[in-house]
Length: 262
Ligand SMILES: [Zn+2]
Image 1 (spheres, helix red, strand yellow):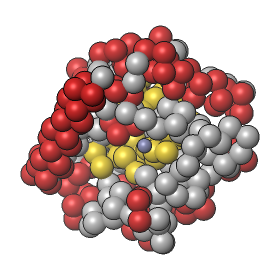
Image 2: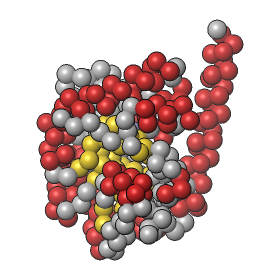
Image 3: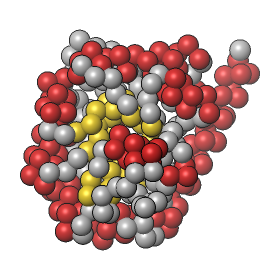
């Protein structure tokens, strides 16, 4: 049984992304090359729901399983990624922040051009699983219980209204979760949820804390192959961990300042 599965985390796929999304974006040509590499190396993309189901029931996965995931809901996923996925017959998962997508439910300012629901439906029809990524993309672990419940439930409701089926997979905005956040996601009916760990996903991480690896604009072909094969992941991402730690300190400090003020 496959106990270590690479879950690739993509954001925007774009020629000229907005400055806010640039670092985590991938150029369309690089994305196409990365998908070809997966095919050449015998990887079989599965959806997040498929992985969750297999690990829950101890069922076999296809040879060399890999997950291709997109966060937030950028328009380039439809424009640039869908034709490539379609051509190769690759499954994927799109995690949408429902308040960011273009349309009636649009509620907060998105960082770049987002998908509309017609495009989301076309992705779903082509075999992309649509999962939840909150409603307005906050740091869920920083919210009070009422707001946390709203962010998770509203996201699931909007997807169910627009697509006619409730989503079963979730991805935490910024990768942040806590026991309380994981419980809220589970209570809202999601069967599995993805974090960001820059490590391969393993069954023992549990269905609500599966780790992903980040693909970014600076990820070259060689580094990409090392990532999906689980080689040198720790070394490549020592830099990220330092950043995450630094950010955690900033968050703690902000919180302390807030506490002092109230
Ligand atoms: Zn996000």
